[in-house]
Image (cartoon, rainbow, N blue to C red):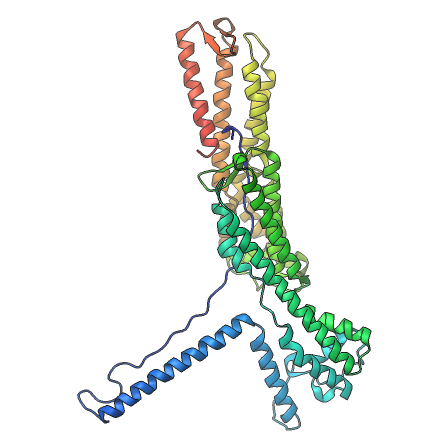
Length: 499
């Protein structure tokens, strides 16, 4: 790969954190069974109690691990079982006056519902107290309650992206084997497909039971489909579709990195650098799509609201939500962050690296090599000036980013100290230091080329090109200046390419 060409690509997704369940076993302190130096029971009895306690601990541990495994595989099971207990309690004790007023859907709506005519209205019968339902409606609710376990599924396996897929893509080097990561992606697809099949099979079974209970076949089908779709819906998003999109986007990233190892490399920071603008654009687009798909699969859209923001992460995470669903004050903050994100995408490495590489490779270097004594160097100097302009814009933007963003956040209602910390964290995530360093190296490269151009243009009578196009000087002093400037240019290009 030509070391002078630099096109950058970055992975843009947000990680989703998870926690693993743990268990502590508490043991009684030694000697707690009696006063020091005395024996209250016979040794054989003490031995029996010790064995009994050990067996009890072992049994309790086995039960905890078993129940924990069931809950991990069926995360909705506790809520379902609790709902069943409450429902049974209402059914057996509903006629007794307990002196406690129950309110909310969890306690059952005590107002009789209108006669259901749509699938959602039939499903909403589950939120009513059975005592206010008709006999036909009770039969339908009973069937729906019985079918809940048949459509229980887990959450999207986003943790596999966080712990396996993303780290492998980030550590992938030219020529590395990608069989394992592709297998991981397929396992994720298979898991999502198994959830879909489970819900589909549950829908078929439910449709048959509802039809047998007297519901019209067409309505039974609609109710069953809506019932089976609910466990796979986050907000208004059917997450298996979005999760499969995420797998497709990850596969695209792997294809880009694995199909032609000669067209990219990693810089010191681990970021991929491409020899083709088209590849850089494809990589960045796939990264952006992957981030959006994972966000939709994990959070859904529209119906999920964040807690009121108080920390830096709370404010930055507002961009993960649909702005229309946020309170007015938080909408303004999210809008400020989104607008600044757009400015970041249009400034610095991600926006200008490929264009400046084209200027250098296609205009500056060819123009320099074609220059003859007394020749016109206007085009080359114009390209150098454009590179400097973009580099200076980048330096100014990222140096001013924290303070300008903090000012906007304060105007949007964010407390001053949190606004400044949020702006600093935003700038760090936007790789402000790396962008400034890149722009400084661009300027250094431009300065070195300009110095070479000055040597040639100001001394047209003291140099010429040989048959191979190499510059020959008649002055030893000019030769030394030219060689020093050439070495400086090579060092600047090496720094620009991250090496």
